[in-house]
Length: 124
Image (cartoon, rainbow, N blue to C red; front, side, top):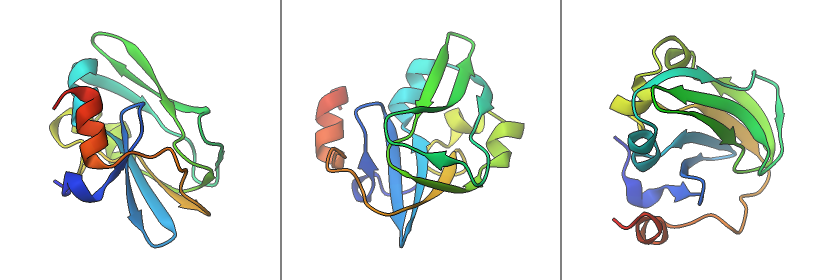
């Protein structure tokens, strides 16, 4: 599992790990727990252009269907096929093997949260 304190977060319960000009994106353990057992993940295709705050995919669980929102502008350079094949990775390892997409971006939004701010948001 990644060190949660070095990640950036959105109020929509996504995390971002910055690796140079790439941002690896996933959903938080809090979101995964609230969803329940994830049974289907639909991710944007490699090469897709993302616009911050727009719906780019879907996560279905035994409880509900949730939309994935792009946390930043950029281009998808990799989608995690392992999660598409085994959606339970979102529950079992949301900060590791359960990552969703890697995006080449120009700038990070000013609205991203630190771990402390995100923890306060979700009451951890």
